[in-house]
Length: 241
Image (cartoon, rainbow, N blue to C red; front, side, top):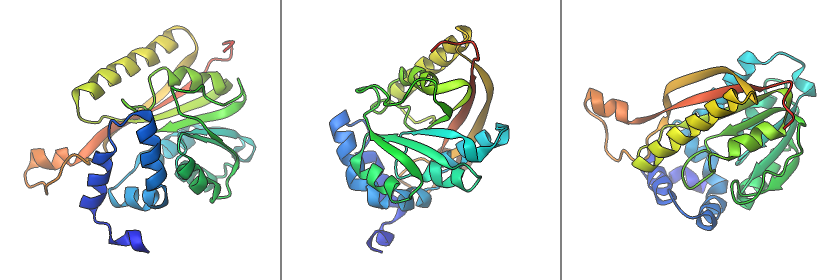
């Protein structure tokens, strides 16, 4: 396959080139990247989908084959692939990239795929329908705004799970975004919209695309990886949203 000649350095340069584009540029970037996306991310130690699915599965009780899953920012379908291995069968996917949705369609796992750019368009999902709503790695400046988390909660059934994986990327804008996100997550809990099931931190969310040289010392070695968290919430039974 042609993309097998791409090195880790090539992949990291590609990721850096796509950071902080406007929404139109971001969708075009992912349209072009779609065919090699999963292979490329595997090469740089991309773990968020595995971390999120594992944490969700460890806390989920119920008949997985009956569960309705909303996979937000589904990309090429990696989350659905991992969840299907655990017995989940019913998936609706949402993504802002037509190229990514074409890849997701090729998995044969989704009953429906919907094109929508998070934050620019409303989340195309029915209210209170899904047993599980999962979003991996889309909460970041230039991608999905913090306000999207309320839409995730809105789509979940009362008592349903909302799983969010978020990397701690470098940069001042990212630091502001992270604080805003954590403030909103806590505010929604204070409002009684959902309750926190748990937070799973990791020191190796994925390799840091902004590190361009081989790490030699201990401190540099740590910088090779982006840290991150998986957040798992349960929607309140009594909430009306």
